[in-house]
Picture 1 (cartoon, rainbow, N blue to C red):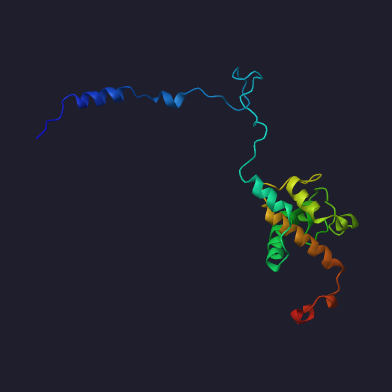
Picture 2: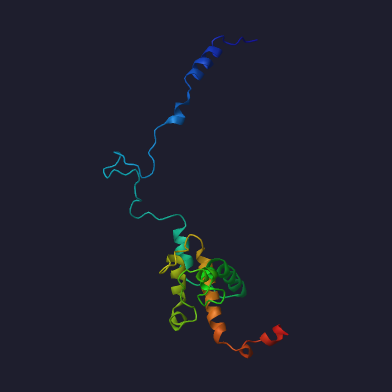
Amino acid sequence: MRRRAPYLPLIALLALAGCDQSMQDQPSIKPYEATALWPDGTPERGLPDGVVTRGASAALAALSEPPPVSEALLARGRRDFDDFCAPCHGYAGDGDGIVVQRGFPPPPSYHSDRLRAAPASHFVDVITNGYGAMYAYSDRVAPEDRWAITAYIRALQTSRDTALAAVPDAAEALQ
């Protein structure tokens, strides 16, 4: 049987003696703190030119072409419209949502002539980048859902001028 070297516990003790808690007390640069690290005195560096975020090409592709309109797309658009848009625009798109009733400036009605004539891409662009007092929803609403909301806005606009008799099977569905 092989005998263990008597010096192994001594080596282990010496190795552990070198450990201390100084790693938790390392100096660091706080955000916006002045530093001599860079010539401009700031600790942050901007992204290099040409940097593209992960998934950006897929998002651009999804924004380039509207999907075909279907019941599922309109249902998703209504759900997202109710969640993201109705607080300001109101459930009917008149610009009289609960936020407006509490003093926020009213957004334009979707039923105005200007917005009826606007291309669908206008609504997608406004959802993506914001407009006026409305902030951008690009980080909250997926590109596919922006098209779904736009399709639902178009359905709201169309429903305002369409007679019930012009909708096939509508009378039967209401009885």
